[in-house]
Image (cartoon, rainbow over all chains, first blue to last red):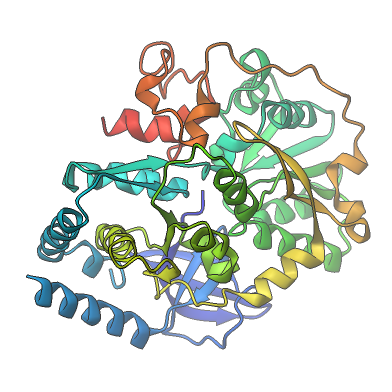
Length: 75
Length: 362
């Protein structure tokens, strides 16, 4: 039930509502629970009609490349 | 899709598997890990993770499916509320087919004429209340810390709109108290926990500090194959090095301090109380009830729900399965009398219920 997906913010409407694109599907999500500034183009992880977390692109990239380094060094 | 495809990279999955194999061999003894979250149970089945792992690593499922841990009494209360005159009962889809006493369910109540509607957000229920002025919309508030803040926000939005025909039947539960209960069991044979991803998005890493204190590894893990395998590798590393801590594999979805704003909203609307869990019994401070300030939105204050005579289905082993002491294959009803089409217990209903996931991917 705690399923949530990263979606890209397409637009931000009045009343703290954003339209996001999740793999081609558009959905409205409320921004009431997001504690960071978000803007069009950001990725947010959303659940039950609410954005819960802004994905930090750099953190994501660094973690994946760190993982690849570890894997290579173990091989 | 960005942030999904790169975590399904077959080459990376293969290398991770080799690294896990090597690390597990260096530890040289069998290891057991528990995934707490139902979405992990489902992903592990779907991506065939169990089959990828070396023989000595056993994955067991914990009490992480909200509809599964909801006791039969609350299922019965939901069915009662749904059957009241002039009530629109709104629920997340998972709850619809969960059997209550004598096989009653929200789906059967709907077939008998109750106005039961599936929503994907509590705000859909608020909208339904605005459109159905003559009726009262009861939203079933179910789910862990991922979902509870969304329902809290919907209550606040309904209050701001001055809606008097919207209320919540809250059976929300908090995850850490259930983990504490598992850890208190001296028979618990678990080396590490695959901690939930999106619950942790809200509660952060500190909420699991009791796990390393009990001498076990804890890794907050994402839901793609690369995530889950990396989470398992990180648990192995903690075991190998003898250094237990709460680590975050799912860094793109979880910050160490979680989401304080969502937590504050949840705490503003809900207060903690003891709550009954299927399989685990009553756990202190694990339930979320609407605070007195929001009692106008509390379905249990608005409607007199009588004490119902509730009883679990005979022979159902969901309780032991939710504690991780039994595997679905050890339940005599599994895949015989109990199937996703005709479920006896809740673990066979929800797609992320342990039995449903084991059935589908067996």
